[in-house]
Image (cartoon, rainbow, N blue to C red; front, side, top):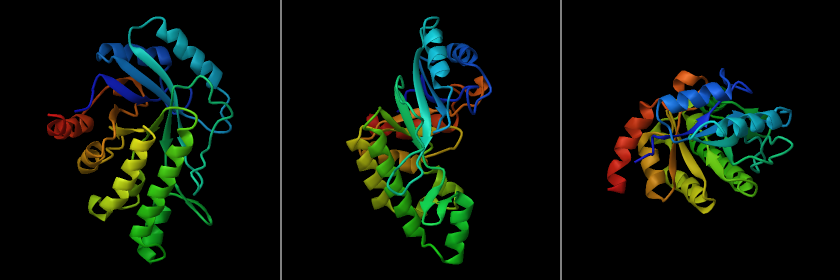
Length: 240
């Protein structure tokens, strides 16, 4: 069972979101959240982190909702290297995302990977193995610097045309083992509807902590659960 009073992934107007920190906090209060994690996309060119952190600190003084400062970073290397900003100081959470697969010719997005699979240039099993390897190495690397979350887990493979049945259970269990070893929490994403209920149950069965994440881009999406609530209900027997 997921704690639906916690929203572990919310974007602000500093990056991909529409609303300010204060507007998002007001939304969190309205829906009864006890905790909210700000998780804007950041990279080497990001210069707004000091203002972002200060804004969250000011908001914390005016609310009982626990506010946590985080960022979302993309894995960009086959060795798990990520597009880190210059300074991770002051961050309480780093959420790892894999939006493209590192290939010898460069980063390949989901459509490019789908084309390679359909043409026979890549075997589906190889794609899954590469994805799991990159993700595992990325969370291991991030874990050296900050508490780690896995954002929109396996959504890349969904977008590349992979069905649940295409995902080798042993490979997913290997990723779950890495998450458990690094104390990485796995987000159940409302926006991306990932992971599937079956894969969420697999992560939970392997001892990985799951956390509800709206991936909200605006205040009206904060703490709003449909898909996540469904997955949470399916997980209920595991904790009973």
